[in-house]
Image (tube, protein in one colour):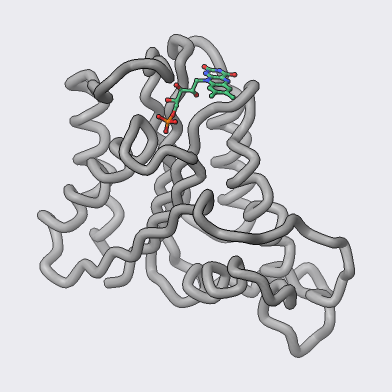
Length: 188
Ligand SMILES: Cc1cc2nc3c(=O)[nH]c(=O)nc-3n(C[C@H](O)[C@H](O)[C@H](O)COP(=O)(O)O)c2cc1C
């Protein structure tokens, strides 16, 4: 199965990417046919939604804008599962990821129909400097928003992850949850 990993962190090997990798490595141990494609949004050149509404034309399948996000949106349509990662920035997802979420407007057709094939699973991996009592609403909001798009979404949060820590260190409960979510991702 094809898993698309989309990192909204500008740091390719730190907290967010490391948490995403825990999920993906677990998925690989639970299914022999996992093909994971990794995408660092920060390395790409793209804009936010221009509100052109061209995606609301009937014969369109997603956002029509032809920058480097077009390929990512295509792979989002084609892959069976996604792992989306973001650090919490000022209480929200990173700007890199927010532009992608806005461009997903094109996955909704002119009659509000969902153009995303049913049955996709998504793990959202969130890391934050603050403790777990903070930013709970962000996880809830993302889960609800993805579910409304017909995706089966689960969130994993790694809290108390300072931006200045030299090496990401995850607690055992977070490692266990990442492992369970990797298995869930590849279980029919
Ligand atoms: C610009 C910026 C804004 C941040 N805002 C928050 C915040 O609002 N809440 C929080 O808990 N952590 C915040 N952090 C900390 C990061 O979310 C946290 O350290 C995260 O794990 C970093 O992920 P990374 O290693 O993938 O870059 C912020 C960090 C940066 C650089």
